[in-house]
Image 1 (cartoon, rainbow, N blue to C red):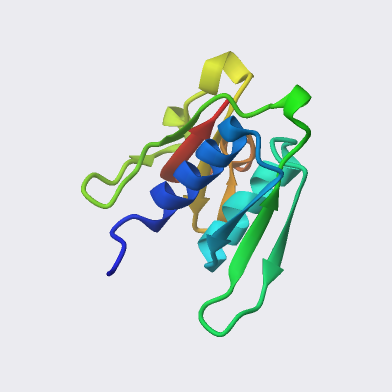
Image 2: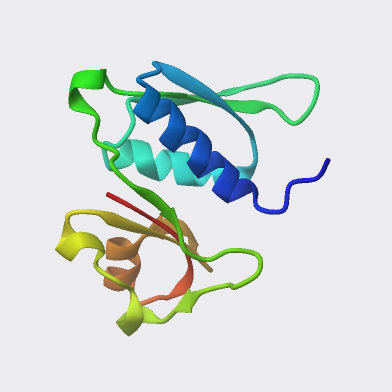
Length: 130
């Protein structure tokens, strides 16, 4: 069965595993998913991640911080296959007044809204995290 929105599936797996108090979760891999997870690690929302080779497409294992310090309270998919959301430099939202992050897919790669605003580029608004 084909999946229509793999990014939403990844965010849901991370959200559910984090709320359930799991130490790790496995996600089917893609380059875009690896970049989103890399940003989550750089911003301190997850402990670590590792790409694992298997006979199919590979998987990404995401390791969470201890349950006493759960930094992820919300993961929200914004742009989706049925309604793509593109933002210019002036339209990049500040998630919770700067407490959260917006993740964008730009011509220069996947990056946070803060970095895209600083570089003066816009792109597809993938998701917001806080």
